[in-house]
Image (cartoon, rainbow, N blue to C red; front, side):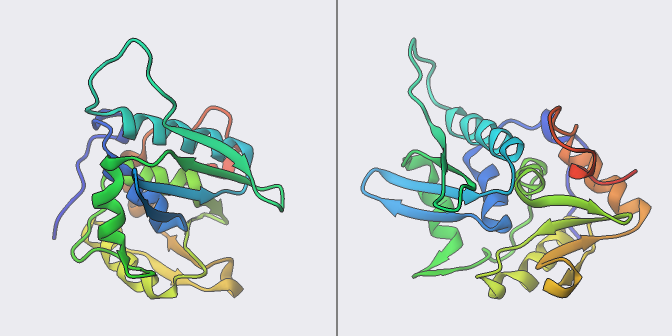
Length: 202
C-alpha cells in the first residue's frame, strides 16, 4: 500500500496537481483555447478565500518570477449568491483536466493517490466535522467518482466509508482516532478564519 508523506501540506511544494483535490470535492475542469480552467462552488466565503489562495499558489509554482504577476484566479458569485472560485485558463492545468475527464464525464485517474496538498484543497472546499467524524464532500452529479475516490483514499492510507444524502452526503466519512489523526497530519493547520468544525476533530 502506498502511503502519504508524513510531512504536512505546508511542507510540500505547491503544484498544479494540488487542484485535483478540488475536482474530487465537486469542482470542474474545462479545457479552453488558452489552457484549462478549474472551478468550484463552495459553501462559505472563508472557503472561497482559502481555495483562492491554493489556486494562486498552485499556478504560480514553477513560473519564473516577474515584476508583475498577473492574476491567476478569482472569486465570483453564482446566481444563487454562492461563492464560485475559478482559475484563469492555464496551460499548467491541461494535464489535470485531461486526467480527470473522459469526454464530458468526470473520472478519477487510474491509481490516483491524493497528495497532502490535494487533500488540503479537498478539505478546504468541502470538509466538515460531524459528531466525531469528518466528512469530505463529493460531487453529487458525478456518482461514478465516489467509489474510485474511496479507493484512492485507501491507497493513501485513509480508509473511508461512502455515505449518501441521508447521512449528510454524498461524502467520504473518516472515522476513528488513528485515521483522523493521519488526515490532520497531512492537511496541516486549519484556516485562521474557518469555523471550529472545518477541520478533523482531535
